[in-house]
Length: 345
Ligand code: DAH
Image (cartoon, rainbow, N blue to C red; front, side):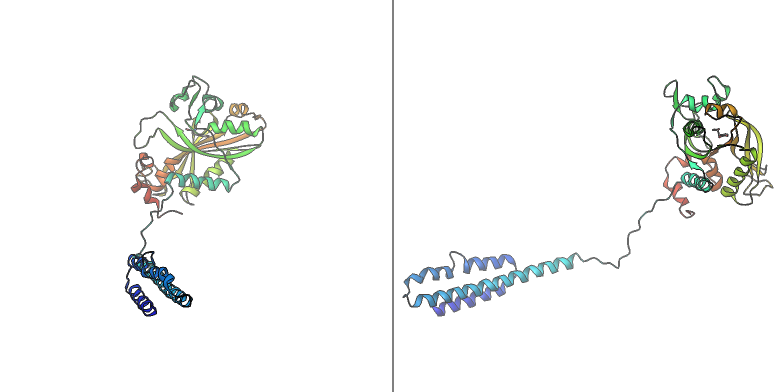
């Protein structure tokens, strides 16, 4: 019987050694250690042995069982490790491969113009103000000295929500709102935002566009302050050697009102296609805040004065970047937008 056991052990160990996968190993386990296996059989047959022989044989069977179990476990561990190694090899990543390019977005040209203006005015102590795009007729027109029926309203026809509510036609209503909010205190604000007009879209008109409004209210604010400020805008946006020219104009909310031109940045003033051979380019409207507007905003026009200006962001961007059609800003064609990548500053 001892001989038989030794033989069994050798056989089992050899089969374990030869097994090449977990399934085969399991078959060996069932065959040798299972309930119907030879080792179990031998244990069952112990009863037939003499009482002296029993402990010795019992120990021997157990040793054989331990050896076989141990060998099985070692082999299982080995096969499992091998499987992991194989998988690792199969899924290996080649870190030396070049990466896939990531498409990085860039700021919209209008955003860039607006941010440039904001930065300039923040550096001069202005605050950024905002107002609603859906506005009351009162703030958009009346508080700006454009009472109902005023002929100048015709130039700014818009989209009405109700009789008294509309999509704002300019950022100027923020002037009226800020004056009320500031309760008679002097202030300086810059206000960028979307505005709307009932216009037929073409290369130079859009029913939606962007403006940047500026307003300063305080004591002794003079026309020369406005002129100096406009000069700074012109030089910052279009180059240090730009000159400005103020022409008389009309806006109901300013008196006097002006239109500012800059000397042409392309030809320097001698005349070219950009300035339509005049040497000058019209940039923005401005003026001294009308006493009626100050009064409606809660400021005594005898004590306070102010200046204001309104810049069209598209016009600045079109001039600066040589864009020929205003609609490019709104059609979301990435071929257009991505051209501004390299000049990103
Ligand atoms: N609100 C005017 C417009 O949309 C632009 C403008 C002109 C704004 C003169 C001003 C200003 O603040 O003083 O046409």
